[in-house]
Length: 529
Image (cartoon, rainbow, N blue to C red; front, side):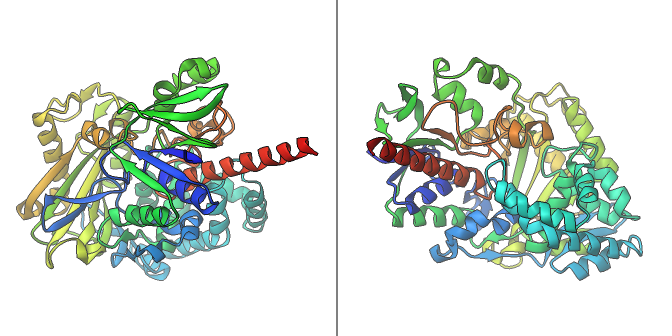
């Protein structure tokens, strides 16, 4: 019997297992899919000569994560690669806002939009340089972040903290208007904010846009050499070298609770796998509480709160094997790993408003990834392995476009939505469609079938909005990985600090387990005295 059973071999589950293995625990990870990784996987399913990332692709949060840094995955062979430029947001008139690798170059580009905007960007980055590392440490520790929070508070005081806190609470449209005279800086902030399910007018979207923009400036948007699966392979290799076990194709159907404590899990194959000390769940909160743990073991308040749980936007993704580089009208976009495709901030607002009304956007904002630009090993020289995704409502009320998309996601609807995304790219890169050698469509239902944590394509395991963060994540409570069942811990992005590939929810859960076991040992010894 292992000391701990981890449900799910996504990045958070694997990080949790590694942390426990480092403490000398025996750990068994059970994964429903036939391969580990969750939303960090790659394959050659679009074309045999092209490596495609199935879900996540660029990893600024992983690059900045102190959790992953402590695991030293380079020792397992993980290598990172960067595109010449971090991110670009082209406009229909040929101008382009560019997040460069060097802050001086980003600033110089923004001065083409307004002369003072280069200094504004540098001022913003200086603030980040003072508070950013402590902010990341505070974000990636259990709530409340006492020690990291004290360090951050000291840095905030030195950096005119009240005004900085106000800026982080602003909607990203307002933050951009206050900080930049031209469109360039505003576009970089707003486009990055919409990596989550936040509109340009949402409270706190300024803070998220600022965080992602500054992470991009300080760490880039790196990718694992040879595909996202290389990150998973490094985590699995590290765990196995420490004696951990990863079993794929083993779906957990229930958590066994005796005397108010999680003591085992049961699999679809009828096996009961005991856990001597703890069970950690890298699953959605709703799956853990509604499907795996019986209601009789949970407080009625938690069950009522789950009725109010809000998923983030659905996601629709297309992968392409391209015969050549994307012919962007704005040449600066050619060297960027990530390209934001939208008609400025007003286009982003229109897009988010349509989703809020339950409408399929007629002009979808697309996040476009140029993977061979970021990592030349992804496809033959002179070609491009590319993808784009857009967000959709979780429940579709109507289609704002002409295709009558309802959310059934049959073949006709999938093709129509993929064509709509390609049409958007074609507006900014005429001739794009002539380069398509092969494509693969991943509708919201397809994404969920490939990773059950991606509910209808929700990539963050719950909304990023403020009402479901920190002490409100996944429901109002402590913001910690402990659950009402003793020995059971939530170790997924459904827990604080939420989505993104950084490993913090898994590490937080593992550390909570170790603290609880240490306290139990101390109490046991005290009783023996």
